[in-house]
Every structure is written in structure tokens, then in C-alpha cells.
Length: 199
Image 1: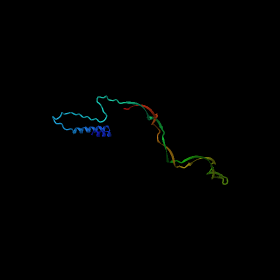
Image 2 (image 1 turned 90 degrees about the vertical axis):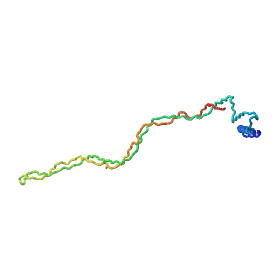
Image 3 (image 1 turned 30 degrees about the vertical axis):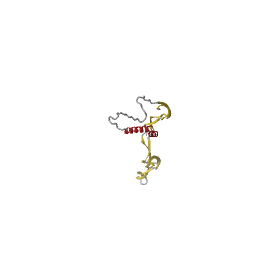
Image 4 (image 1 turned 135 degrees about the horizontal axis):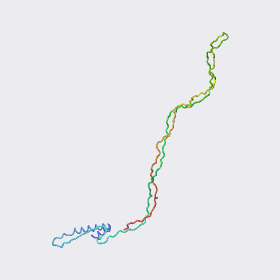
């Protein structure tokens, strides 16, 4: 029976062997005849099974073994936030409006010839033929001919509607605080010493 168990133990490994031996020990205890009182002395039997590494209570605990190794590590780039105060230019928009334009007049001065002016007036004249005064209507020059300056209002441009393009401010100019990322240190490879547990 132990030969079979040894064969199974070689196939299953150390832990399987321990399990198999434990099962056999329990089986052997079960096959032993029950002792009657007075037939044979009574034995106390303690059976302890441990699976895994063996640990002795009296042995000292082994401290872990560490080793220092130099490794190559990538260090990412470092940035910082910088606030800049910038002037934002005003925004203008060109709009088209229909506006009425008043007519344009101009005063012009011209020299005009004014002819002489005559009037008929009643005058008393002595008539030698009849030997007495008679009333006669005579054509008399009241104003002699002359030049006068005449001022005339002349329309230079007619009134009407025109399309006028105006530049309208849509957004006033102002200062704004703008945040930007500034590179402090570029990414690079670095050699570091690390303490690694080896046992």
C-alpha cells in the first residue's frame, strides 16, 4: 500500500503526497480494532498535518533580502500656468442705412443790365400858337439804364435717399487675463536607485 502511495506522491508532487499520507493515516486509524476496557492499554494519539513550507516554532524567522538596483525612468515634462494680461481690440461692423440727403443750394451773383425807365407825366407848357398854358403829357425818364447785381439761389444737387455705410462698434476693446501653459522642464530619462526585495 505504501508503494502505491509513493508512486502517487511522485506524480502529484509534494503537497499531493502530504494529502495522500494524511488520508492513509486516517484510514489506518479507522481500520484499527476498538479497544475494550481491560483488553489492552489505552494510547493517546495526536496527529498534525501542515501543507506548504515547513515552519519550526523554535527556528528564527528569516529576514527579507533586499538589493539596490539602478533603473532608467522616464520623467514627464513639467508645466506651469502663467496668466498674461492682453488687450483685445474692439470689434466693428459695417452697416448700411438709407438716409435722406437734403438738396444743396448755392447763391450766385450776376450783373444784369437794367434799362432806363420812363413815365408819362402831365406838365404845363405855354403854347404860343394859342397864347396860353396847356397841359401836355410828356414821356419823362425816371431812372436811367444801369447794371445791377442780382443774387440767385441755384440748386447744385437734388435731394434724395442714399445708402450710407457706417462703421458701428459691436464690442468694446478691453483687457483680458489669458492663461497659458509654460514649459518648466522638458521630459527626460533619469537613472534612479531602487531597493528591490529579492528573497
